[in-house]
Image 1 (cartoon, rainbow, N blue to C red):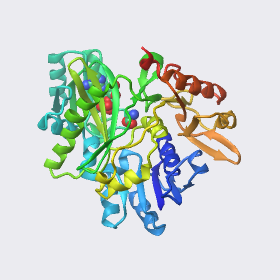
Image 2: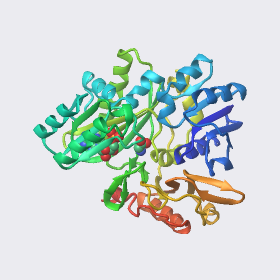
Image 3: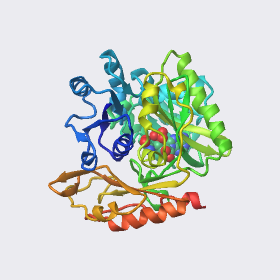
Length: 423
Ligand code: AMP
Ligand code: GLY
């Protein structure tokens, strides 16, 4: 088979790396890819949002299956366009992608189908939203309705902070139309876990659980980022909790979508807060998580292409259960100086050759590019150094040993990825 992967992050590197292990696959393209992906697939200079450029390419190159990494292409309807052209593509269509692209849609669906989530109220008027914040007090959470590159959520400790978030989103329009409507919701307390499944609306196949680390500094301090690291399995998700999450969150949501006439095929990712009253949904994503994918796929023994193809063809019942490596996996993200703010680029990365010699360690590239035989930084998150070990502690030791060998000017990373699992 000829496969096209869309995206340019470490998640897409992990996807390409796993897809390359499939016996079904002869050739992999990635658009636009990055410095690491280019070593195992052919990178094509087409942006992930260029739906028709990608369609043209897939037709010309006779791509058998396209796999979409980032959410923007899905929300633009790339799946609908490929299907119209008779091409197979793994991911939800535009209507289904609303589960991530519109938090209003997602919250209303959850309310209608009794999917546990934080209490909320929707606003399209800034003054009313601010009055409501004064009434309920802080802490509370302010969310822009639309896609905001992971920056559209403010967990406010103070009333003024929450009101300022409303001003920025609705009056200053920092996220454009994504902030036309906002949600104000109850602040939940607990540990977070990411539960990803692959579904074709009839069958659901669960992937291994994972825990993300969104804040930039150790002990969850500092601003939110695209994710500074992850580990799998998320030990807080006991078998009993997983059953509850599947029943009350995953199945109810998929059934709800079906009742609304929406066919969901692809990855469904539930961000869950494990509260004292039970698991509650923080958000849905309609794609593989980043950096969760980097710790889930190294543990997957089954052929990912087979599963994605079956979901795309609505034949997921053919896939029984997935086989997993019982070892733990952790991923530590090495970021550029200044990230998640502005950062310099083109810093030479050293140590990758040494790390390549280590067993059970793989480095997934995010913001890198190759120039001659050098690898240079080209983004905020640069590398996802990933290691497997018999326990989380062993996986941590192995991964941090590898991280210690890598360097570039201004490198920073969290030193506590995995610690929560040791408590
Ligand atoms: P979201 O994009 O909705 O997942 O939000 C990003 C992050 O904000 C989540 O991973 C949580 O850490 C935090 N968050 C979102 N909603 C809530 C909530 N209702 N209570 C507490 N934290 C939240
Ligand atoms: N790990 C968070 C995300 O993929 O959105």
